[in-house]
Length: 365
Image (cartoon, rainbow, N blue to C red):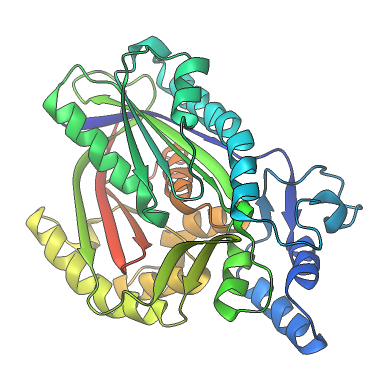
């Protein structure tokens, strides 16, 4: 039985920072010379990220200096334990906000949920925010839980594959998928070009979806998940990494990533879509994860997409930054509100380098 996405909900922290704030924070954390500060300003502009949200921001008053609004990052580099303490404090409430919105959008009561899939690569705790969702929504204590952990920006597509398997195995299943990422917990101190780029791109956000068998009529215009695909680009393991260190999780992001994606994406996607009876030209709307502007542009050029076909991805990047796995659900939610024509193709990239794809189609009430 095909899976139907019946509702989507998103949430971001209350306070946000703009590009000027990001440059000022970079000056505080990493830019120890005028030359590096000038380079930092250029990198920040090139990200095309205008605003980002963080659970660590304590005030939305833009006239206050960023160091006063973000006291967690003082002169001392916080340890991983301290960063995980903040994760434990903030993860549950943000995930809960997104989950409640998804259930309301779907018109599905919380007690109807049979399976809970959580996605996260920016924090670990046990019991985790999945237990907070069960307690606070509330869900039935017998709900079946699955955690998709540490898979990076494509984690929500892996979670969607898991949800699809549950629904195909049991048409009565109702799956709540919740992706929660607190990337701002892992800002890097000191000058490292790859981590400077990561500091400039990543942000906090949560997104959730509710899925059931497609035989149930949707409460709002829904989506049907038709297929999923995955591939590992050979000889690229060193180009992207996400590792746990003594002072947070460290992002490795080589400038060679866009070229690798550009060279391998189209041949693989043509073959995979062909097995679904489709071509690239047949796709009505594209949900490309904006890992960064260069990765997004390389993907668009490889696939021959016009600027308007990646406009939603660019808008989410501009408004929220890269929220890792939650980002793709923000894009799908905006495309659904815009009634984008189907079929849709969602694409995201992660360490490996890996490519994850999901083929969806619109499902009207």
